[in-house]
Length: 296
Image (cartoon, rainbow, N blue to C red):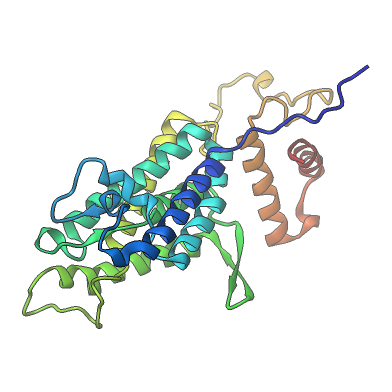
């Protein structure tokens, strides 16, 4: 007899993070519903730039300013967090998320709207989401991403999504946040800004910077993950046996980690997308079948 009970899959760190955010989202609704009494029990978790507490540099990410703010960050976390966790593992995912949250808060506090002169608060996990975006997409720059814009699907390469997100964050910081922080006679905000509900572009920039640093670090410490490879050419004096192909009995995908197999599969799919299936050699077609069967 065999036990036919299906193996229970362990929840990913991304799923746990979303569960925690959802719990605090529900608490946030309760908080907003009772705030008319003059007390907010979640406010001590928000990052107060006039007098920040030690725990607030991380706990501010648990609080969001509204339903849409929460939904956008939750969707980005679910999509990008799963990509990072599958490619690099749970530990790297948590390090990337927390690094983006922390550096995003630091950049906002140093350069963003408000500064110590005003009593404003920073909310949301978007700094961590931007860090995840960099780590997830830098190894997939040529991959096609389908976005729903006003319910219409739009295909865009990951490269252009990163450029667009970085450009929006930089422009918002230069033309809105930075002049809004200072009383400059020569440089003023380019458009009207509600400082109580302003977008923290500086925190997004901090998240992007943190993600890039994390991606570089992962490429050095986990070379087999996420498409970070070291290619070494053979010297001219190498013996002929160094170039002997593998025997047919051994699969070319054996010995590859899941991240390496996924990266090689992405390269083959990119070639098919650009040049068509007929551009593949016979060995590449065999490898495509092997990798597809392995990752299925």
